[in-house]
Structure formats: structure tokens, C-alpha cells
Image (cartoon, rainbow, N blue to C red):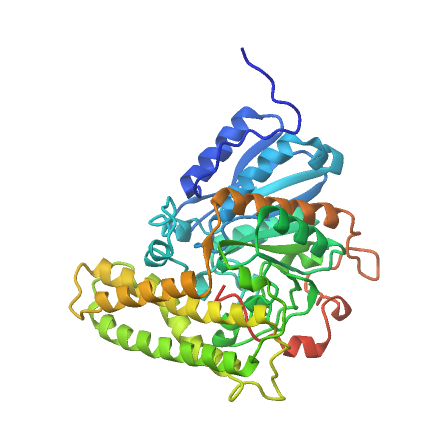
Amino acid sequence: MNRRQPQGRCVLPPLLRYPSVDELSAGAAALVARHPRDARLRRVGTSRAGIPMWLLSVGHGSRQALVVAGPHANEPVGGATVLRLAERALADPRLTEGADATWNLLLCLDPDGSRRNEGWLPGPYTLGRYIRNFFRPGFLEQPEWLPDGAAGAALPETRALLGLQDELRPFLQCSLHGVDIGGGFVELTHDLPGFDRRLAHIAARLGIPRELGAYDALYWPGLGPAVYRIPPPRRADLAAAITEAAVESTWFHPYRHGTVTAVVEAPMWGVTAVADGSPPADRDAELRAVSRTLRHDTDLLRHLLARIRPHLATVPDAARLLAPVDDYLLVCPGLADAWDPDTGDNPAHPLPPLSTAHLVALRISGRRLALRTAGLLHQLVRAAGRDPAGALPALDRLIDQWCADYRDGCGARWIPVARQAEYQTRVVLAAFELAGRRPRARSGSGEPVPSGRTPARDDHGSSSDQSAEREGHLAK
């Protein structure tokens, strides 16, 4: 006998692994088939490889919420989160009718890149398996960034998202990201009073460490523990754009519509020490050690790349793997210098006050850059079908050693996929509630802030804040 589900109860099966691109679209189609009146699925774009980009919409309210999954190819938790959000919105009318809201859930912004991660996506989830199958495109092929502004957006995935933002004019946009090693944190274009307390409660309930000194936001204003204000965009050269998340982006494009953007970061392997806000025992000694390690790792990897590169001419699509390798090796020396108190900590560009959490985050970030580079080089050698340079044993040794350092030196521990997705879901729902209380940003005429208007400085910090934006999302 068929029994109706009680109102407010979700019907999600146990979540043991991340969904693939194909499983996301199949899951969304099945959900629409079960709820044809309240859910609908439409194609809003096509990736460079010809993969459809699907938008799942739930509800019929006049106020639009936009949630973007899969902006970074190696961060798959957002796909699980959007399906969970859809189920919640369908089960609880307070999230749709009661809020006069429609949920618009973009299933995957970078389906091409996500497909390239399917070597590790089904599990088992070990650091070594993840790194050896890791893929994230080079900076210029990541669809959230607008290095040439919105008018110059070259990627079809980017243009699809920009079109959605201008069509929907959402009151809230959530960009769903993952942190492979570390803790959870959120970046906001506008302050949401009380959000930091909501985040603390959610993280404590689910056992997710909050990242109190996030590398991404090293120089950004804080809005409370593990909540950071995204600075306004500015123009920069490629190296600066890669290491500073101040480049124009789809985070800020809908600002003109009064949109609050929340970048929600959920960790895969949690590290308890990223939540340690105590003063460090010896700040400068730890900074020197982190910088010295990054320089050493970079030199090793440059020599390995020099041995491998001559043998890649016939490797299919080698350029896609080499682009992020070249990005990482481009920025590593500058980051090492910026973190070193003997070379980078000067009055013109001082490091901010650093807690133990900041120093742990820098240690994790420096090693992350090296590990990702080693993993991509490992894939290039495997793709060549032979190893004339004899680089594979050295790469395996480095990957095993550096993964062990994460496990044993940093205490990195796997967080089950279901808990990652539940954490991210609850954080989005908290942002939805608080952003829904906020009046739309208006211009002096009473109209929404028009296209091209620079965000008001008093909402984002002083010019000195802007000049201090130095690190970014490459090493996250």
C-alpha cells in the first residue's frame, strides 16, 4: 500500500559517495517526474565538450535564489548538496510558498572538468587516490572568473551563468565549493548579521572544523569567525589574478541586482587545528618553515617537469593538464616570498596578525600546491603510456610522503560525503533565511544598483583593505 510521505520529510537515500555529472542529471529528472507541478528541469547551456548544463527549479515564488554547484571541477560536494536542497524545498513549503521563493539549482557549472575527476569520485576516498586522479583546469578555464570582464567572457559555461544571473536577478546566490584539506568557512559579498553564529552552530552539530584563518581570505575583512567579506574586484596581471581572488568574477556580477553572494566551503578531509585561534608559539619560525618547504617542493617539481615535458608531444590533451601545472609553478615562488618574514613581511605589504589557525592554513595550502602539481604530472606520465624519464617512482614517492604529512602531521581525517553535503545544505539554508530578511540594495534613485556601478566602499572596506587583497583561491 502506498503511503504519503509526512510533510517536511525528505526522501533522499543514504549518501555514500559523490554523484557524477550523469547521476546528477538523472537524479534531477527523477525528482521532476515525482513532483511535476513544483519542479522543472531546463537546459541553460552547453559545455565546451558538448555536455548539457541543467537548471533544476523548485517552487513558483517571485523571489529567486540561485545555487551553483560544481564551479571547481575537483569539488563535487555541491552536486550532492543541490539535490538535497531540492528535496528539502519540495518537502517544506516554508522554503517556497512561505518565502515567496523559487530555488534555481545549477547542477554543475564545469561538467567537463568534473568528468575528469571521475577516476576518484566513486571512492574509496584516500588522499593518494584523490591526488593521483585530481583535475582542476588552469585559471583561464575556470568558469567563475572574468579576467576580461563580463563582456569578454569566453567560456560558454561562464556565459550561461551570467545569463542566468541577469535573467533571475536573485536575492541570493550561493556558490558551492569544497576544501580538500582543512575546514569549513563562508565568504560573503554583504554582511548577514548573525550568520557567524548560525555557522558555528551548524559546524558544531555536524563535527565540521571551522577554518578561522582561511588562506583564501588571508587579507580580507572578517565578519565573524570563519566568515569573510569578499573584496570588490580589480584588474591585475595573470600571476596576481591567480593568487588574488580580486579579479572580476561571477560572484560580483549580480551585485548590480542587489544580490547577496555566499561562497560556501565544505571540507573533505577535516583538520582540527584550523579552528585554533590561539597565538602561535613562534610566528616567524613557522612562516620560515612553510616558505622554505614550498620553495623546496617547487624546485623538485620543476626538475621533474623538465624531465617529463619533452616526452608529452604525442599525449592527447596534454595541454589541459599542463595549464594548471604551469599556473601552480608560476605562483609558488611569489607565495613563498610573500609568506617569508625575511622577504615578504614589509611595511608596504605587511602580513595581517596571524593565529595558529592561519599558520596551519598556510602550511596546508603550500603543500596542497605541490601535491596537486605532482598528481597532474603523475597523470601526464601515465597518459604517455611509458616513462622514459623515469619520473613515476619519484612522483609516487613524493605523493605518498606528502599525503602522509597531511594525515600524520596535520591530522587530516575524512569526513563522510553525507556529512559534507548536510553541512553545506544547512549553511545555504541559513544564508537563505538571513538574506531574505535583507532589503534589496538600491541606488539613490530608488532603483536597483545599475550595471557597471562599483560596489559602495562603505559596504566592502576602505581603499587600504583593497590594496591588501593578496592571496586567493588557487591553493584552496
